[in-house]
Length: 357
Image 1 (spheres, rainbow, N blue to C red):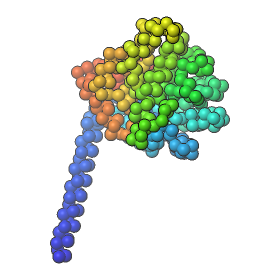
Image 2 (image 1 turned 180 degrees about the horizontal axis):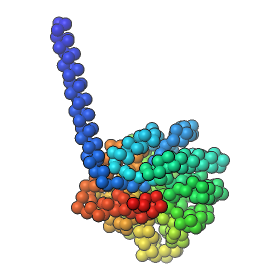
Image 3 (image 1 turned 90 degrees about the horizontal axis):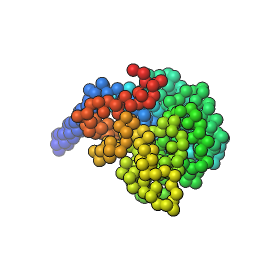
Image 4 (image 1 turned 135 degrees about the vertical axis):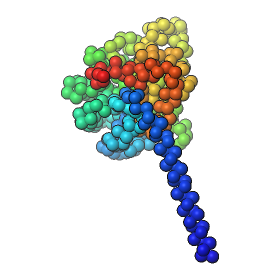
């Protein structure tokens, strides 16, 4: 009986070791697919940082209102992810909710934005080749605080642009008249603005569907349409605007949206041709957006010189980011020049002071 038990234990141990060896081999094989493609030298314009003090701030207000868990992050982890995805330079940003957690406390919102910007600037100072950054801002409903932070960051910290979210306050999207002075300031300094979606004014469908999975793409579409149909985009053409996740649902809905110009009672200030031209004036990143239907729609709709690589790590799990990137490379395998443009050259032209080789 004792020999039988020992034999069973040895068999189980042998099975566990075999499974582990297989799992490790699979992981190494998956990683090696990326390590061999170092020539890509990607520039990642959708790459998030999560300092410990920010994690604690989000936790203290009850967590991310979108329902998405806040992942763990470190500088070492970021560099590892960059190595595996063949990212040479990441322009980092703080995703939603960001300073919006303090929309009802101007002082806290301003302090958090400043703290995030000082952290980001130090990260870049100590790793200038690997990182650039988009500066954070207080909630845009705090007009004075936002413009003060733009002035401070632009003159002192020298960011590569600014991050703003799709809506603020009581469903105020980015074309809202109260934000006009902020767009005036952005236009005055001819800066890059990275628009990231934030929580939607709707309930979470169920516990399996936090808002980033289905609502974030539509929030991007809502705010872009607000910018374009109100004429804000056309009024401030010197602002270079990056849209997350291939513009959300915009490539699929753009033609439909132009109908606004054909309904006299709406009195839309832009005609159909102008609306489509305005849509094409945006930059689009590929974060979580590399399926064949997505890329075909994006290429049929957007200016290919304004498509940028994005990974969305670490909010996108590394395995997801790797699969998305692999799909992107596979889609463009017969068009090396366009792949090079998306992975690097388009961003190099957008950020000539940061990437100059």
